Image 1 (tube, rainbow, N blue to C red):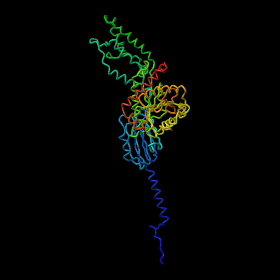
Image 2: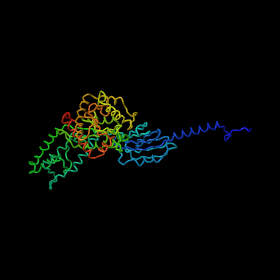
Image 3: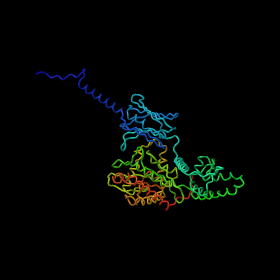
Image 4: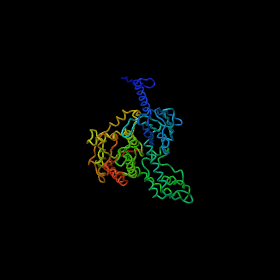
Length: 503
């Protein structure tokens, strides 16, 4: 009987050695695959506060940033990456109206290293950090480009007021002039109509322009009321003119005295939830919370800006007026920096089942949530920083911020409940309510210690019927009207403190 011999392994290797070699090859292959990242998506979020560039990948990316101040640009070497069409899309995603980014260049710097060069429109304070997978996102490399001179909410408010004033002046009809002298001869009624344009922003605007609060006219054709006063003394040398000319002077003086009764401006901060990297809740048909609440906030802003309470002009300031992410603490800080009278955060709720329905209003709680649902919602909303992407390492003093958030007082909560009750009553007149009373929970965005603050859940976007309502422009108009009535009702019962405000 012949003896069977095993088939010799190729190249003189034993079967054991061959298996070991194969394992090494597989191991090296896996390491090679692990080192190469795949780009899932690239995004750019432009905003006045800051512009964000995001690279989303299937595995973590390692980046080495280099900032060059003159001309300002940020170079970032991304390791473990090869140039691909997804990265090239960044170049075309830069918008012309981006306040911070002028252009982006992408190239293969060396094998396995891609270099991004972001040309900036102004000096910046860049932050480069990574975010672990959360919600719908995988690993993210985030490049936040903050202007070296941070945007001041008060400056933004002044600029907006100046734009409105210039628009009003451009729309006003030209004042009639005397054909022989070119001097304005605006009658007294026209002066009276112009006087109410003055508001508490005037002094600060005048300081910014380095001129007196009531400037003298520099052009004889100026159509404003002060110009009439400035032109009155000019005809004095002419014999027939002096007697009748000074007569109109008391009229502006009376109007100025009347305007003194308006010693402050009422500022309401509107906070559209989520934004940018954080879409918020998403409805069955794809409607995103961040988009619908921004539209509602814009409608409410227009109503506030056209309203006066007891002769006091109102002004709305938005924590975000476009699609970009704002950290929760920054939203609170913006409200405190403009010395807001009210803070209203606008959201669209979602739940695990589509049956939940109705609008809700929440205030802060010192002793825990008033219901399990309120606690669940507060926890979900407080995770916005995790989803939107916050550079925790970039926060200079987290202890100070945490202290500010914990300084909420009983008086603030009491006023917030009054505001919430007024809003809930008006919203309940045009929409179904989820609960008949104002609920309370530990929402981080409501923890400004000195500002009555509420969070409005306009509807359950997870409910198909209510999602359809939120998608309706007519319904959003009704919602903004109800909120405005609630704000007015609150101030009628709780007039703002009679203090002078210079903003």
